[in-house]
Image (cartoon, rainbow, N blue to C red; front, side):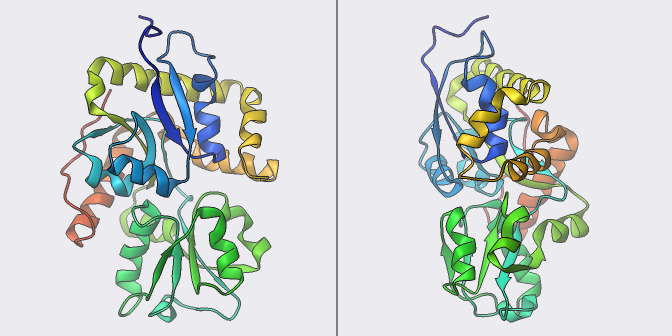
Length: 288
């Protein structure tokens, strides 16, 4: 059934290549009969904040923010970022901390205090940084590596394409939090989630879910269709880096979280709740 008579839904996600690749077909009218949407691009710290304030119908947020928005927003089973070998990195400059213990009392830049990256960092630091770090400074993603390079912070917590580019800033990897998570739990890494306002109702939530899955499949079937759009929003990213970014973050979990995906999310939020870092949510219920 066509939903074109309904008012457009607001959809907010980052300008990163994985998001623009995934949502291109839906947001550019290439999927007839799907719900109409209006798009806004925003950094993860902004989208997390909007979700906490209840602003927007559909948002790409950090899995770490779910416990604070769970009553108003449902987790959709597709469209997000979850996988292996794609975790956040802790970076330092030459002459900086050479071990986790040396971060004690130091200043660390992070992309969002509600981000999954920061939640993983807190779990990791709680085990390996005696007494904890000093100041935590929230910076836009694009400013973190320059801040570490220039000595304005002692370390930086980075995500996404920084995995491929940090060496160009003269930085080195102190820790791979994905390796930490996978080795200690066996689960893939939950990074970014797509949430939808529960008040949309079951029928519209189902239509949105199918639209996202159709958009993912279209992107895989015809990657050239979105390429110009992806590169236009990639902040002068090298095309090869954009391709690597998409290849890493758009995977089988993007189309369907499945049992392994939900188990990973439950493990992350359960461990964090036990550590007193987030409110308890209970087990997540898929929207299908």
